[in-house]
Image 1 (cartoon, rainbow, N blue to C red):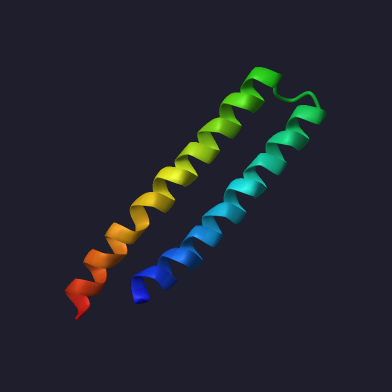
Image 2: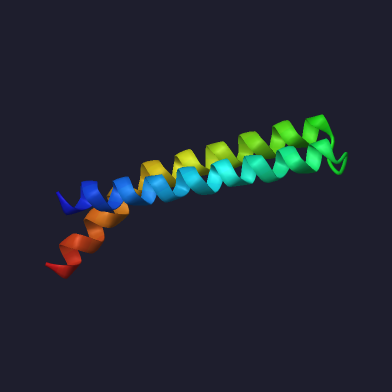
Length: 69
């Protein structure tokens, strides 16, 4: 139960971070500071990194909780 709760809150934080990164990239694109290709590349990289981290968190939390208890 603790692992699910910790993972859910961590996933929420990761989603907020990825959404904020995409907003920053959109602002940079509108100001012509980055190209469309860089916008797409960086957005995909941010989303994929967030997905990988969010999917690996439950395993890490499970190991930490088993070490504590």
